[in-house]
Image (cartoon, rainbow, N blue to C red; front, side, top):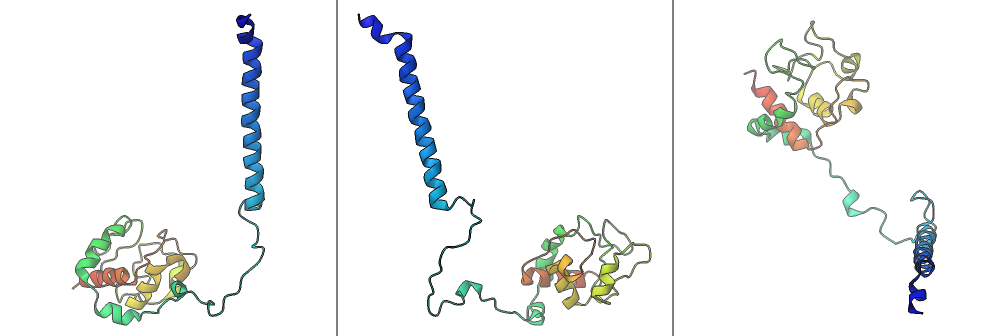
Length: 175
């Protein structure tokens, strides 16, 4: 008689009950999640806003403008040399020797489209006539923003100190 208790039908019923319980749990978790998070997959608008007096501008959002001339005056060519490794994938420091980009020997202070044997994008000449330290700073910060349509695929160098150091290094290599 105990044998009938563990026949295959009883085991099948027990497994079915276990699977049904697990299914109800999963559906309940999905329903609770969609109710709690809004079902919009994170793209829904905030239902209400609590106004807090004096909290219009967060302290982290305040960006202090730094004068590039001040940063450039204290730039380190030695530190810029270590930053050069990012540039050498596409540029060369020998006069007239081009990589994917034009040779950067003597770039500081020279005309933007200096080499006749290099196919510059027209966007650069629209941005500047001469590669001054300020023009290089703007270009290195965001090439596509400074010269829209440029073929330079670099995303930019965010640190103003790094840009100044790199420009100081480029300025130092041509004597």
